[in-house]
Length: 297
Image (cartoon, rainbow, N blue to C red; front, side):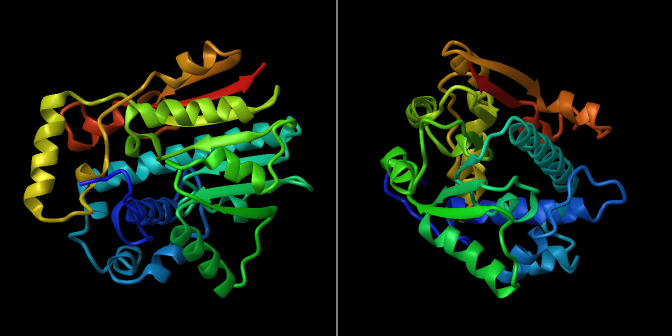
């Protein structure tokens, strides 16, 4: 179970969820009509080795990503990636040149998006997670397409000060991404995260957020008991909190941000992808998810 001071690398605890996402992006990219193509996702999986190499080589048919749930999860990751890629394109077009990735994980956008000249991408995450990404890209001779600045810090610490110390200028517009993060934070920490963004974001700044409503308590406790019984300390339901401080569009909207919220299932349908059936395992998660983008006035 999680503790206030827990830490991880790329193959343990919250860190290994980044590999699950990277593997999903790699599988999405192989489809005839991918919603998004992350050309670096497979490289991260191969660098991690073991089960992650087997997933991308299709040599482990029993892996969760090759089940019905996994296929829905891959579509979800394709949709989420497309949504935030397009979000950043709008920020670039608006002249934003400071990008902040909170819990950057194995997000490869610093290496694959066409950033404008002068753009700085600040990546905040656990030190060993950032190190794994950098070393993998260096080994493959992949250079970032913007100036990439690592800010190795736990987001439960004073990350706003660490970000300013790394060169971030609160007087200039910025674009923030909170993707695949909030479920790993209790409600109070979510509030502090939102407040930190609002405090550092100048007028004209963007924020993009993936959020999830808490699932019914009975269902969550059943899943947590199942995870505990498995003996796998890295099981998903051992890592997440079933909490939400406030819907992001509501929180930011009350603070002079123009916010728009899109339920994930609506976005999937609009992108031409099937929506998981209401009684499916995938729907227990995906039906709670909303994608939010906002601009500060």
